[in-house]
Image (cartoon, rainbow, N blue to C red; front, top):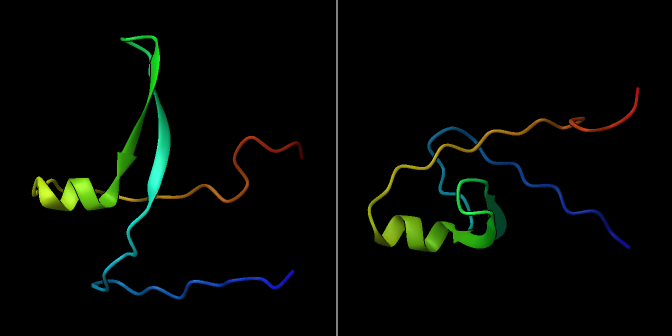
Amino acid sequence: MSEIHCGLRVGQDVPDFKLETFEPSKGDFGEISLETQKANKKWTILFFYPADFTFV
């Protein structure tokens, strides 16, 4: 299996994606897509924790 590296820089467009979400106030799962956010002219901030929820 080959690895895919994404080299995005500030100001470049992010490829469209979909993520499964959980809304605690509703107690239900849902989905969010970048394409929908763009269509609705919503700002989206992406941040990552590369080692989040891993044992040290």
